[in-house]
Image 1 (cartoon, rainbow, N blue to C red):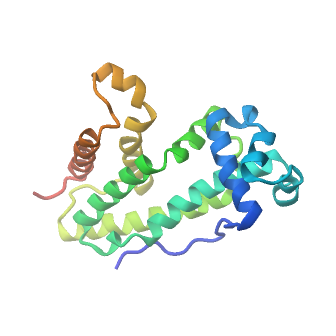
Image 2 (cartoon, rainbow, N blue to C red):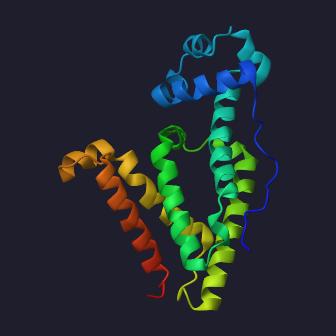
Image 3 (cartoon, rainbow, N blue to C red):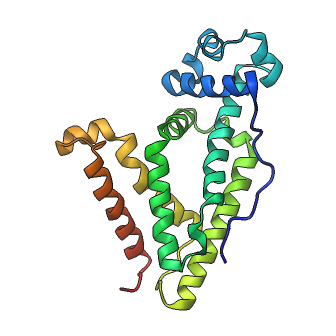
Amino acid sequence: MTQIAPSEPEAPFYTGVAERLIEAGMREFVRHGFQGASISQIVEAAECNVRMIYHYFGNKLGLYRACIDRAYAELRQAEREATFWSLPPRAAMAELVRFTYDYMVAHPEFQGLMRIENMADGAHVRGLEQVSARAESLFDAIARVLDAGRAAGAFSRRPDPGRLYLTILGLCTIHVSNRHTMGVVMGCDLADPVFLADRREEVVAVVLAALGAAA
């Protein structure tokens, strides 16, 4: 049975004031980026005083890095807890795509933080070694699905797991990150539930076709 093994270290999940600061910080950083984010707005939303940021996170950058770490940790945890890994290879890969697609639609803050971090050339996420460590567990699980699929004749191709995930992630996010511009270009609402449902199955079909999935 394929599963994602627990990875170390896990991101700290805070309580009380520190948790409120994480939640408020995520919203503020997504809206205004790291430089534009207002400490006063964050502490007001978290219903605490500015000293609490320094107490729990050291400074504004420490809070920002904690928000980035949290965003990745929540995604990896959700992947680890998913039950589709035990399905036959073709079904498991289809459900991984659907899971990733649904998660990105439901968590636009993840893409918001990644957009900001990419504009900073990944300067801060690069220093979070645990982000890469957690991803290795995901790639190992994908590799096991691919290997099982090849052995069973369900897949005729066996791509690199990281590159395959990059393809899945791109297909599962472009309609969110480019929603407004591509909505104008295509003349439709990319947030419409009918569009999202149709697009979801299109992405599944593209990924399975790329793997040479058996009919």
